[in-house]
Amino acid sequence: MTSGNLRHLTAPIIDNNPITLQILGICSALAVTTSLATALTMSAALTAVMASSSLVISSIRGHLPSSIRLVVQITIIASLVIVADQMLKAYAFEMSQRLSIFVGLIVTNCVVLGRAEGFAMHNPPWPSFLDGLGNGLGYSLILLLVGTIRELFGTGNLLGYPVLPTVEAGGWFQPLGLMLLAPSAFFIIGLLVWAIRSIKPAQIEKPEFATRAPETAGRP
Amino acid sequence: MAELNPVRLWSRFLALPNDSRVKTLGVAFLVALFCATAVSLTAVTLRPLQEANLQRERETRLADMIAALPGMADILRETGADTLETVIIELDTGTIADEIDPAQFDYAAAQSNAEASTPLPAEADVAGIGRRPDHAPAYLLREGERLVLAVLPVYGSGYQSTIRAYLALEGDLNTIAALSIYEQGETPGIGTRITDAGWQDRWQGKQIADDTGAVGITAVQGGAAEGPFEVDAIGGATRSSMGVSNLVRFWLGERGFGPFLEHLKAEEGQK
Image (tube, rainbow over all chains, first blue to last red; front, side, top):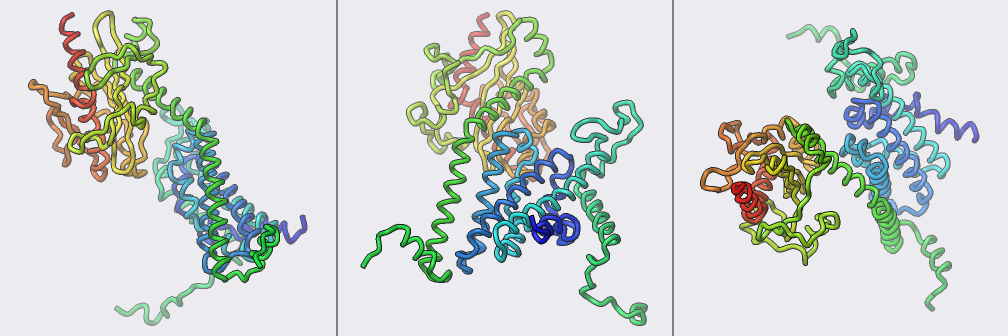
């Protein structure tokens, strides 16, 4: 693997992370991160779908009529999602019940179509595959971080095994109910964005609108 | 002259400008064909595994429901039966069809098989199932000679899916012991609240019919469920709640298990 290709794989993990930099795929990041196990399954499903859809779309990109390219991309992504969903229903039935519709909703996840349209349509299959894989891993990293924090502080468990002894079980840890609600994922992702942009100031965007000048701000 | 060599045809197709009409239609058709094949292949090959998963889920639900009923675990232990007695019922007459072996009876197939089911007239089809199978299984639990529990498999249309559940009746065959929904595809987060234990528990202890024998149980809106025949519908999930209520009413009625329950009551009365 050349260093250029390797870059396609590693760049989306932190530098160009789909969640913290592009702010895509937030819906599923909120919904499936209440426990680490669901976050893990969802990450695996999305990474598999994204890598294979990028590969397929990239390999037929030379013959895609521009008038129907989005339709074709969505059709391919949707088929791969159905395949992933059926696999989960057959081999991980309980997990697919817990994820309910969110595996199916991968198809509407902007990350997948974004990479297909933004990268796979203009690059050869192998870099596209790596890019899809890298973005999937970047998405997974954030999901797993959020899932770990939420499950650990929301229930005191990790992957269902007790880590912090809860008060109910005779320990000292009082579970934070907020962690199991959707807003906590917003807070955690916000803090992650803040942390990453403090370490890598290059990610900070220019303000799109100028704030008001100080002398006008004081007027009624 | 028409070119018939498929390799040449294929390369000519690929050489067409991307925006030509033939190529657009061709690409759309081929993508659809490949995607459809991939999806159907996975669905068909994985079907047996998924069915087995659902079957296991059903059995767990039935076992859980019985285990959760007060006293039932004790009765099961005392009688030494580790499971319930399964009977196949001919729904029209309400009698037990001895000629059918319960182990061989495929209830799921009977529901869609035209020969094993009867179309329902629209006004009688409260549960929205279209056809009703001629035979249905029921599970009975006896303590000595006395009937203590009858579990009926019930199903019907909710808001957007078929809801399947087990309805357990106490020995008097007029009191609901439990309702357990084991399969549904209602709107996630809204209609799926019918599977909440809290809501299903509200069915417990409700009466089915009044003294005249008319099925009275129903879900009601607006939190006014006071009477022994009324269960609160879930706010925001009224259609799903009413779906459950309708299917319970249908299966307890004369087109469902009604005749069988009458027979059973008469039998118990003679003892």
